[in-house]
Length: 268
Image (cartoon, rainbow, N blue to C red):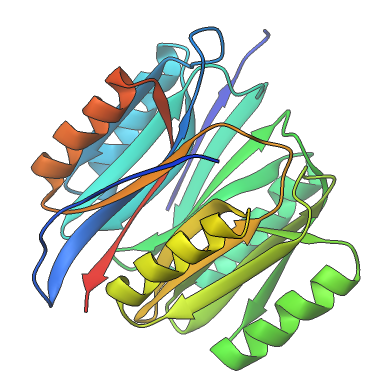
C-alpha cells in the first residue's frame, strides 16, 4: 500500500463500434464534445502494474495534470489526466486490504477530500481523491449483493442524492453518492452482455438522457443515465485491444472530444 498526493497552490450521439467476437475483452471509452475554448489538455498513460502506473501518475502531476480516471483490465493499468478540472489538490491511495483502504478513505473525506474514482485491480483497491470538486455532501455505501445495491440506490435517490460512481468487485458493490451534482433525474441498467447494453444506450439517448457512466464488474455492464442541462454531443466506443483502442481515443481528441472515463470488460 502507498499514498500518493499532489497539492497545488493555484444530444447528439456518435458511436464507433468495433467488430468484437464473443468472449473477448474490450475497452470502452465515454466522450463529450467540447468547443475549442472548453476543450481541456488531456493525456493517457498505460503501464502493466500498479507500481509503474503510480509512478507515471506522479510524473503527470508534475506536468500540471490531474488524474480523472483509472482503470485496470487485461493486464494493463490505464490512467486519464486533464488540466482544466477545477481541482486544487489530489491524492491517490491503494491497498489490498479493504478494511485498511476504507479507513484511509474515511480519513481523506474528513480532511476535505472527495472520492472522484474507485478502482479494483490486481487484488488492490484504489481511490482517487480531490479537493475543489463540483458537488457536495458525498457519502459512500457498501453492499454485498446486486439486489441490495439496487435498493440502496433507490433509497439514496429518495433522500436527494445522485449516484456518481460505482465499483463492483471483490464481492462488493460500492457506490458513491453526492448532492448538488448538476444531475437531475437518473436511471440505470445492469446487463450481462455488451450488445444489450449498446441497445439500451441508444434507446436512452432517444429519451433525452445523457450517458454519465459505464462500468463493468461482477460480470455485469452497468450504465448510468442522467438528465442534465448539458447539450454537447456524446460518444462511446468499444474496441478489442488496448493499442487499437488508444488509436481510436486519439481520433476522438482530434474531433474535439474530451475523454470522460474508460472502462474494460467482456464482450459476452
